[in-house]
Amino acid sequence: MASRDGDSICSIQMATEVLDESPGALQDQDEATCSVLFSMPASPSGLHLAQGRLERQLSILRGAVPHEPPTDDMECNAAAKISVEHTNEDNDIPSADSYFAALEGPELETLRPAEVAVLPNGEPWPFLLRFPISAFGMCLGVSSQAMLWKTLSSEHSTGFLGVHPAVNRVLWWASVALTIIVSITYLLKVVFYFEAVRREFHHPVRVNFFFAPWIACLFLVKGLPRPEREINHIVWYLLMTPILCLDLKIYGQWMSSGERQLSKVANPSNHLAVVGNFVGALLGAKMGLRELPIFFFAVGLAHYLVLFVTLYQRLPTNVQLAKELHPIFFFFVTVPNVASMAWATISGEFGHGPKLLYFVSLFLYASLVVCINLFRGVRFSLTWWAYTFPLTSAALATVLYASEVDNMLTRALAVGLAGIATVTVIGVMVSTVYHAFVSKDLFPNDVCIAITRQRPKFNKILAHLRLSSTDEATI
Image (cartoon, rainbow, N blue to C red; front, top):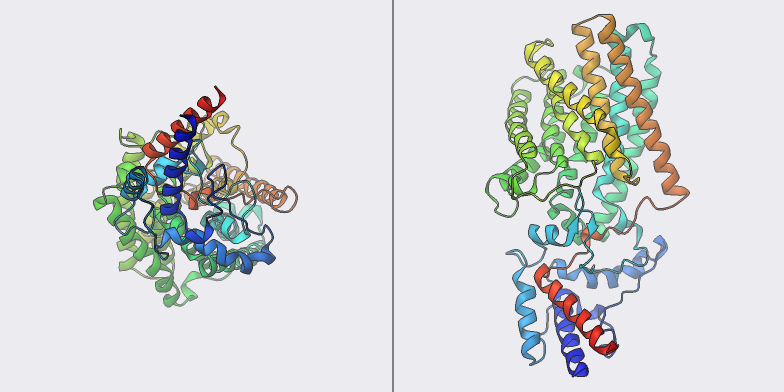
């Protein structure tokens, strides 16, 4: 009896894996464990050799490999129907529900215990597969510092500090170098592992980080060691075009897509999908443009209000966030700060509207600082760069506010927040270098791109069958 049950379990597993795996990646079906093992080199030098195997393993993402029908076993046919049901209408990428079912954590970055990744998680994958789109957070943090120190050296409220413009130039060139390195690395990932990039783009949280490269470029233009009005307007148009395209894609899904409605996928990282509009409006107004900065400001404000209410409301359809707070929660501070600076630049003064947004951001900043103990225990990762950009934006807005309301209190607040932002960037940078080159754990296996397309219910059934088979064999 136990033997017959074991054979049935093996058949179901193999039928499911035939649907989810490329036939070229399957090993000998006579193995007792009925599992799929993948071999790939851990060193970057083996990327070309691993490419063929990984393309076959990742072929489930694009449906490039035809799937042969399973045997006449009725249980295998039933398993095939169950597995195929839980894909999107294109049948080549996991649906949003698949990501929510297979992953957990504030960023949906951790595989649930009952799930099994398509790629092996017991050995390091090639570097490009482990390099996530969220790495552009480093560019946001460093380039925003170039903006901050440019503002500190030019605003009269911080003129007493005597900041030399050379500081801005050094930070700007460092930001350019970092952005080039990260961009080239991710472009290589696009070339060699395009299907992995597609999975990141369809990830409910990771998709927001596709705004980050363009926002970082806007920061570089804003922090350039020269007046913004001297920059050709074509640069602004080139950088805002992809942001507009992403706006149309993401905001359309928020409104109309059933599985990607904002009420279902709302997450603090969604602020990245909004803040680009305000950064573009700020830079455009600085460059002398009028109508288009107002357009992007209006689009950003409309969607920010909806996002803010959704995140606060936490509808029953939302996946409950973890008890411990997370670095991405500091994105709450970012949008109202940048929006206040954009409004002030468009209107020509830091009036009542910009002050309203600035005070909202100041309150959110204070509320997060009060809960700082809840941030303890979060292990270091690239998401710690989410601390840097929000803190720097708060310092920038405070410097501009101090120029409008100039007194000892506002000056002290501006200097204090600028110091906190700078120390935070330095600390995160040092930690990043340590984990990248010393402990070498900065880029772990990115399980977000290696989930299966099975229904979670069927996975639980398989897990229960495996457990039952083990118990019977033991008896």
